[in-house]
Amino acid sequence: MSREYNTDYIAGLIGLIITLFFKYFQEDVNRLSIMFPNAIIIILGCTSVSLIIKGFIKPTRSTLFDVGSNIRWIVTGLLFFGWVIAIPFLGFLVSTISFFALIVFYLSRTQLKVTKGRFLIWLGVIVVEVLFFYLIFAKVLHAPLPEGMFI
Image (tube, rainbow, N blue to C red; front, side, top):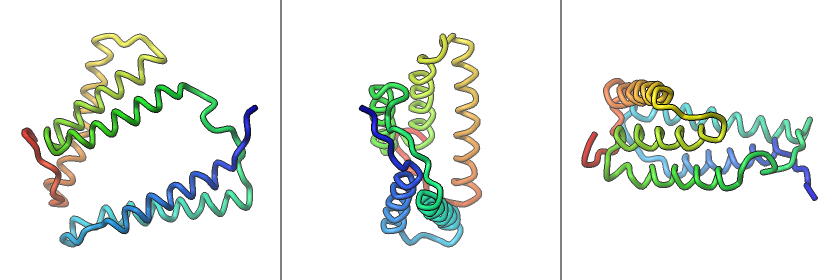
């Protein structure tokens, strides 16, 4: 028996909890470094409150976890947890590129055959995206990123 839930309300509450968590554990750093995290916290908070309001006014009801594989989202969650653990050892750049490539490979296998050429294209996209954000945070915003054995 599948039960339908007000997913707008649930997503809004989870988003609000995450917003409060990040706001509570936010550290005092220089003004330029804190601008982006503050903006994200405000955007996440506003979006979460909007979802909660929408959940009361015009709720979207659907069943939870009835589409896809429960094993897949658990493995993906564990991979993200492993990424967070690896950052202090490998460094932000190396661990992010490595784990995102692993996650993309794992998740894409469910929909299509992963060829060497296709994976190399994805790896290129991952490297460009991660380098872009790394350069923005490290060089423009001067936000300290975790360093490990590598960059």
